[in-house]
Length: 337
Image (cartoon, rainbow, N blue to C red):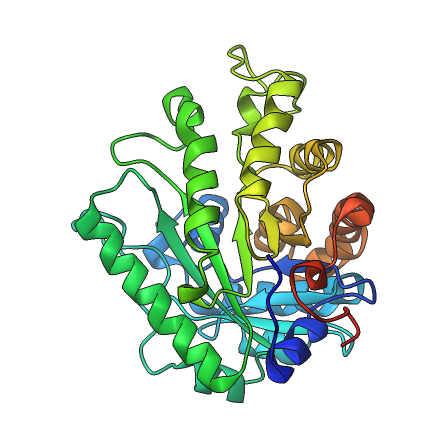
């Protein structure tokens, strides 16, 4: 499905892409997840983690890793100073949603950041705007209609400002633990359904950001594989193909908190399956282990770790992007406009 893309949206997509039209971005818009990592290293509760180390960590990641990335995804709560320290060659995506969800309310409903709008995110320097949505096609119609309406609203906002809209889909199923074998059985159908639904023109999504359609911990020969295996390598590639075929807009893979080696394995499967993914927005698989370094040894040690291990991690991922397809393949323009 080819769609025309406006001048402003094309400019934003080019700003976050490399010269091939591939998006090779580092994601560090995490807030509650990052607090949890710091809490474990500091031996305190997540609520007790102060803002300062979060800001400091995001600054270091931005400063040291963006020379090796086409863009960085940050949040406007703790990431704006980091955004200013990114490489001049790297574009900027800013998150629009509040972190997490109210566990007392069913459906993992999203909410937008107070005191922010798409226009304000653009004025803060965003080349693109990102919304995270927990989604399952098995949720009740009442829950999903709320989510559909919110995505439509953000899509209209982005269209009005003429800025690209990235929608991040986090798959889940009510009552199932995300790391369980029960969820792994249904994940392929949920990922595929989400990619199909939000490719519809009514949502005005320019790029989908999705997890791979299988739980890599249950794939044979995966670095994360345990005793239980659900899918052979060939069966996994079939799920990659079916999910990719459901997409009507460009899509990127996110690392979903897995290790660097495991994410590389997932990208190998995507390449072997011939999926037309347009790059990655890779987060914890690049920088997660740096949290403990900062807590235990300070900023200089973190900078050294990022310059060595962090850069090695991001370059490992970048090597797997030779198989990626330019986002322009889905739109009626060349990657260079």
